[in-house]
Image (cartoon, rainbow, N blue to C red):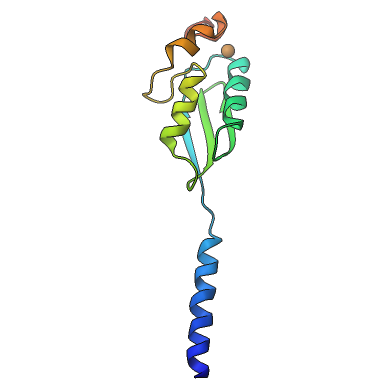
Length: 113
Ligand SMILES: [Cu+2]
């Protein structure tokens, strides 16, 4: 009888450990951002996106790094959130209405280099 109890404890202990496993994942999304204002706009928008833990846009490479909760959101939803602010996200095109609302300098090619 004692050994059965030990096995039950062992099994339940393992499942608790499994639940504590990190469910956060990191993805990188190529965006059409142009400047620091874009960076703030995208990061602010993602701060309110469900399941997103943190986001950071590198203005130079236009790569947005997002840490998200795999149980609450998907890379697809995160890309969609980026397009809704007016930017391309990988091969997902920007929402045209949101894009039109962007300051000219933030639209694609707005910053001549
Ligand atoms: Cu900008």
